[in-house]
Image (tube, rainbow, N blue to C red; front, side, top):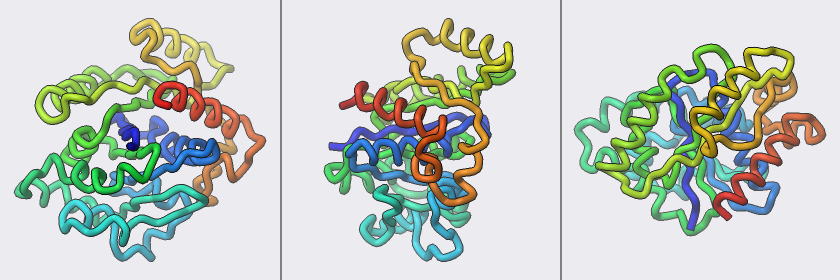
Amino acid sequence: MAQIIALANQKGGVGKTTTSINLAAALNKAGKKVLLVDADPQGNATSGIGIDKAAINIDLYDVLLHEADLGDVVLTVDGVDLLPATIQLSESEVQLVAADRREYRLKDALAKVADQYDYILIDNPPSLGLLTINSFTAADAVLIPVQTEFYALEGLGQLINSIELVRQNLNHQLEMAGILLTMYDARTNLAKQVAEEVRSYFDNRVYQTVIPRTVRLSEAPSYGQAIIDFDPKSLGARVYREFAQEVIKQYG
């Protein structure tokens, strides 16, 4: 049965999609069967893994609103299965409000395929709306990427409160997988100070792996590839391989 991990932070630009794509690819290279769910209407995980969104006729929107069969929607790219998203998904936030089991739509869909995967990773939008609530309700754990920059901790309290509310009311098994420090620039004192602050506040809930800010890591999505395929010998590829091993050690 798959370990379902939602990647979330209502702040944008913290490395959610970068981590979703690269963790999925690294887990796959480590021999794990992975489904990457793009739950962000911007569809950056979809394009970042090499899919032309304009060519997609059916996506997560159809799964959530019309109960489309995942077998008709899932695409496979470099060994990773993808449940894609397009801008059409933005309509679901409004349409789900009146839907039956509105918070459970994603959970119900993933339950049908969970035994086919080792890991299901859900890339969420930078908000705490119904798409993210669906993700939290479906997930076993929430992984929070936090950039090592000024205001890094801003809004984290609200996010953790949202996780707790979902745990109490919708998904009693939900836990925090951990916090991943991203965009780390070892040349700056600020990055070091922020990393120390996050670790002092969250202690052992912070992953040991730290994702650096590198040019190659930021270039990879424009080529539609994970860093492990785009430049396997790069620093970014190495740290995501290390992070995948840390996740495997955590969940098996």
